[in-house]
Length: 156
Image (cartoon, rainbow, N blue to C red; front, side):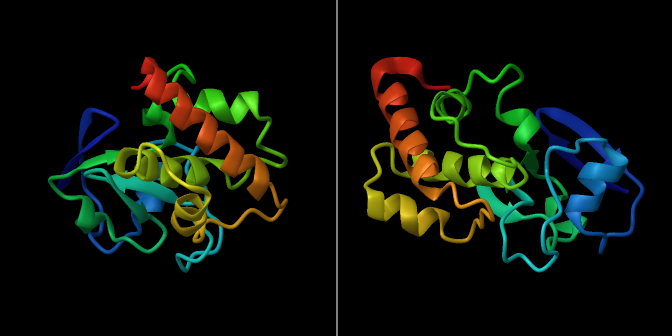
């Protein structure tokens, strides 16, 4: 039995400890916003937070989540009110949208650690998230917009 919190709700699961956290999130918990991309932690589509740290859930065994707090894209906000989600929509970031949950989760850690990031900060923090559609300029612009929202009191 492995127990942890997911988006603020306690779960206790009987699952092989070596099962990738991604599959537990998607298959056992039905939270399908976190995507499978490459399976080798190179694309970032599966990014979630474990105790606030961005983690590639496709390679993290569920045992790593034991006793922790996991946040998925569904837990970022229940109603798209998070400044990043609002900025993403305002800047029309998604094209196909597949990578966006991982992009948002990585950007959330960046803004928590650097509330006013430079272009270089953004590029460095987001380098592990691949967007096949090439929306990187819009992603950068949306992160700057979200930082402005937070600075003006629109923080979560």
